Length: 155
Image: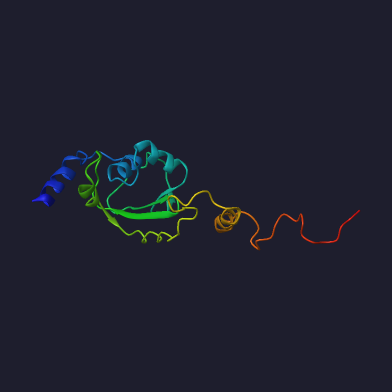
C-alpha cells in the first residue's frame, strides 16, 4: 500500500505534458540538494554535469539523462527515471532516479584525543605533552624547546 501512495505522490508532482523541468529544480525535488538555490549554486560552480557536460541551472532535464553531482568529497551519479517539479518525500523521490553512485568512503575510526576521565583532575605537564603529540602539535620526538639541553654554552 505504501508504494502505491509513493507513486501517486510522484505522479502528482510530475509536470504537465509538454512542460519542461529545470535541472536545479529537479535535483532539489529528488532531494540531492537541500534547497533549490544550493542546486543553482552547484550548477554555476561546475559541480553538476549532465551526460558529461557542465550545464547551467536552467538546463532542461530529460528522462535517461545521467546527472553527476559533486558534494564535497563524494560524487553522486544518478540517471533520470521520472521528471518531477515539486519536492516529494524521500521514498517517492528515490523512485524518480536510478542511483549509480560509488559507495561513500568509510568514516575513519579515530579515537577521541584529549578526553579525560571525569574526576581525574588537571592534566600534568607530561599529560599535556602527550595530548599535543597525539593531536599533531609539538615536536614528534618529545624533545623540549632547547633550553637546558646540555649543549655547549656560548659566552
